[in-house]
Image 1 (cartoon, rainbow, N blue to C red):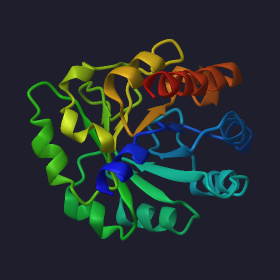
Image 2: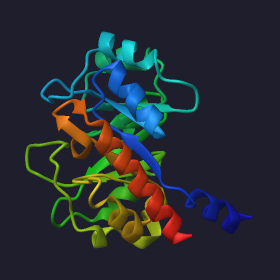
Image 3: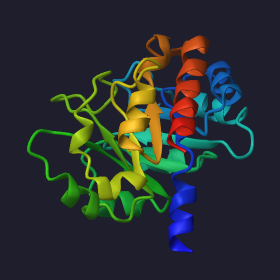
Length: 219
């Protein structure tokens, strides 16, 4: 039974379109087949939204599409405001400890940036309370959204079934990423944009089609 469940979990790669800033782009992502959308609650980001904007976006999301709230070392007050929204998952993208992530009292995903010399296996184990681990490229002083990729071979094979792959993914390289890594899910933001915070319909559709083609080829 365990092997059958594991196979089922890996039979389709889930897709998250992050950095959604308005209801129109949210609906675009859903129509294209996204499993989840991401809302960024980090003011320095060009994709940041307010709690009020997030509420408007959430109002157009149908059942069975997840809403993920991305934060970076957010204050308890902001976390409280975010968790009052109809979101499904918190995404911690800063220097939060496992205890801080758990203290929010909601299911969460922890982002880990692939800094040179990082013991990735130990870091993944440290956040064993997370629903999934998101792996992103590292650039000093930038918590995410760099548009850069990293060496996918650094991802330990034994953890790939619970990894959300991010960092520099585009319609041009997504099929290779899925084929090589075989992650649980992929996360894209800048790679499907016409400008920061504004999604490109053609790119979103092509990105998801690329994931689907790779999944079909792997069967």
